[in-house]
Every structure is written in C-alpha cells, then in structure tokens.
Amino acid sequence: MMRKLLAGLHSEVLLRWAVPVSIILIWQGAVSFGLLSTRILPAPWEVVEAGIRLARSGELARNMWVSFWRAMVGFAIGGGIGFAFGLANGLSKRCDDVFDSTLQMVRNIPHLALIPLVILWFGIDETAKIFLVALGVFFPIYINTQHGIRSVDPQLIEMGKTYGMTPTELFWRVMLPGALPSIFVGLRFGLGIMWLTLIVAETIAASSGIGYMAMQAREFLLLDVVVLSIVIYALLGKAADTAARILERVCLSWHPAFQKA
Amino acid sequence: MSTSALRRTAEIVEFPPEVPPPTARPHGLAIDIEGLAKSFGDNAVLKCIDLHVAAGEFLAIVGRSGCGKSTLLRLLLNLEKPTAGSFFLMDGTTRVSDPRAARVMFQEPRLLPWASVIANVEVGLGAERRATGARQRALDTLKAVELVEKRDNWPAVLSGGQKQRVSLARALVSRPRVLALDEPLGALDALTRISMQRLMERVWLDQQFTALLVTHDVAEAVMLADRVIIIEDGVVALDVRIDLPRPRQRASASVAALEGRILDRLLGGDSAR
Image: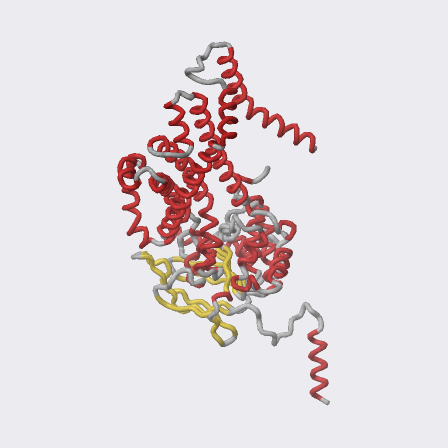
C-alpha cells in the first residue's frame, strides 16, 4: 500500500513538473540552435550562471534580503492595521458606520498611482516602499477579515450565548475560527499585492533590492541578470504563497476542503 | 425502638433501584407559565399562554408551522423577550433563576466545525469546562449517546444523525433540569429519527429532566410525551395526557387512536376556517 501511495505521489509530482520543465528545455534548445537570439532572451543556463556569479559576489543575497525585508515590514504594518480594522468593523456596527465608507473610498484609489506623491513625500528611501506595500496589503486583509467576521454563522453565535459563553470566549472560540477561512483568502491576496507593489516601487525608485538590480542590469544590457531578477521575484512570490498555504492547511484542518479523503 | 425499625424499613424500601423513593426530590424543574405573550410588530404570535408543566414531565408542543411553538420555546430559554406575561422555573416552591438549569437542542446540530467532537460536548459545560473531571463527564455523556469512538473526529465527517447525537450530548453534559428540544429530529431520515427517539426516551428516563419537545410530527409527540399540547391562534388549543405504558409500540392501536385524535384537531381547525 505504501508503495502504491509513493508511486501515486510520484506520478502526480511528475505530472505537475512536466510542463515547466519542457518549456525550459525547449527554451534552452531554441537558444542553443540559434532560433532565439540571446539579445531577446538569454539561455536558461546563462541565467543560472548569472545567479551563481552574483551569489558569489554577495550582491544577490544583499539585494534579496533588502527586498524581503521591505516586503515583510510593509506587510506586517499594512496587514496588521487592516486586520485590526477588519475585526473592529466586523464586530462593531458603530465602528463600521464610522470607518467603512471612508475606507471604501480610499480603496478606489489605485495605490500605485500614489508613487509620484510618495516619492515627493518620502524621497526614494525605505519609507516610500514600505508605505506603498503597507497601503496595498491593507485592503485585501481588511475586507476579507471584516467579511469573515460578519459571515460567521449567527446560529453558532446564538448557540454560544445559550451555553453561557462570555463575549471574550465567543470571540476566540466562535467568531475568530469562523472568520479564519476568509482571513486566509485575504492573506493570500495580500501577499500577491505585496510582491507586485514592491516590484513596481523598486524598479521606479530604489538604490537597492531586486528591482534595482534589474534596472541596473538593463542600463548595462545584462539580459541574464534582468531575467534572473524576474525569476527571483517569481520564486519569492511562490515561496510566500506556499508558506501561506501550509499555514492554512494547519489552521483549517477541520475544514472539509482540507480533509484527507 | 420503633424509630430504628422504621429506618430499617425505609432502607429496605430504598433498596430496589427501579423503584425510586417517593420522597426524593425530582431532578427536573416544574415550569409555571402565566399569560405569556409575544408579538413581532403587529403580528401577535403568542396571545396568552397559561401552562403548568410538572417536574420531570415530557411535554410535546405541536402545531402548524408559524403557530408560535418555537417562539414559546425561545421565550422560555430567554432567547426572546416576552411582550407580556411571565414564566418561572420552579424547584418545589422555590424559583430557579440559574440560566444553566435549562439547555436547548436546536433543529440544526450547531456544532463548532473547528472543534473536535469531545470539545463540542465540553462547550455544554460552560465555565465548568476547565474544572477537573470535565473531560471525564464529556466522555461519559458521549458514551451515553454511543459516540465515544468518534471523540477526536471533526464534526464534518459525521452523518446527520451522529451530529445530532453530539448536539444532544452537549445539551446533556451539564445535567440540565429542563431540556428544550426545538424540532431536533426534523432534518433526519425516517430510520435515524426512530433510533434517535428511542435514545431520547432512554436518556430522559435515565436523567429525569423536564423535557419540552417542539415538533410537527404528531406520531413522534405521541410516542415520546406524557402530554401533548396544540398551540393554535396564539393560545393552547388542546391539552392531551398520553397515559400509554413505555416503551410504546409504534403504530399500535392505542398510539394510532391518539395520533388520529390530535391530527383531527390540527386539521379540523383548517376546515372550520
């Protein structure tokens, strides 16, 4: 049975990786046989080489760390405030009346449209990028937390009350767990917006980070480094999403969608 | 000498477990309802309910949908505020105000999906959840509803009947003195209903709480209850005592006769209108 399980897992993994691996092989082949000019796209192998070169000089690690730090700090600030507002407005009608319509108005401003203004306010240092990431992350987390709290089954809340739960108990044992699936949707949306915002902010105004690395490479026509930066962004995005999914799987193990058949 | 002889006689009388001593105070509470009324806006759902429920009695409340039978139950559980009138839970001649004395089982299981079966039962203990022996009490109650082997499962993997049994265990774990059952079997299939009815009768006989069963199934009311009332136009329209011996035979002549009488009354109201 174990072997069957392993074989099943094997074929599933194979199936998932078949398409991306063949694309890379075709890409490498096209460049090697001269079908694709290296001035348009470097060979995958050259991208790997550029990665190794930059990793040796320490430039890659430094830039990745800077980008990662900006992303996390921005996410923590924006996500934290969004979560707090989401809880407050979800739990209290009064609070919702006061803040929600204003927040919904601000939400309609594309946060990337604020870049010129943010550069004027903060220059091109860290604050500008963290501000933009925080602003971008705020809304998905806010909206999904608020929605999650509001859509907790009222029958469960009534049940909790009839069994004598205090408001604190009701929050921790009924409201928050009930809102969690929706909060996770917000988290994953937020992570996507976090990287997107950072990419734009770093390519427009930065003196370090992966986006900056890509823009520098463009100046010197180092196509391999440009592609490397794009790949790194993709990998970081994937890593963040995977982390969120693992967390979701652990926290929502009770949910029918996450139960093993 | 005569007193000690009396005491010995009392001991002998107490000995057989199936005959409870007549002086023992019943576990269930009596319920006194006086002129209870409830309106939602202009709609007077309950006009004037006067009712005395004896301690330990199994009362079934039937009526057409929308007649206010669930509202009556919700009033008694303090889930709604009455427009007029009052009710008291009575322990002998003293009023009981402890809200934990009464528990409810809803039509839906209303289990916390993120808590294991045993944790859901423990919800019924309220603040006593953290006391020593709480887990054991929950386990014993799960045993009583024959679900102890599912204690660590999530509710999502249980069948409808199993969920309702967990819900029953949650209501019973604090040993309530009044148990309100708001159409608890309404969503179950016929076979599961019958086995749940047997289970409910067994735990009621065992724990001797006062049971209030709201149902639209007259057969179920006749099978389980000591007394059946019909609520119609906001008042108690019929009050029937069911003096059949337990366990009752489903579809026996006497059950069918009573069932027919109550159904006639329910439907007769329709033809008169």
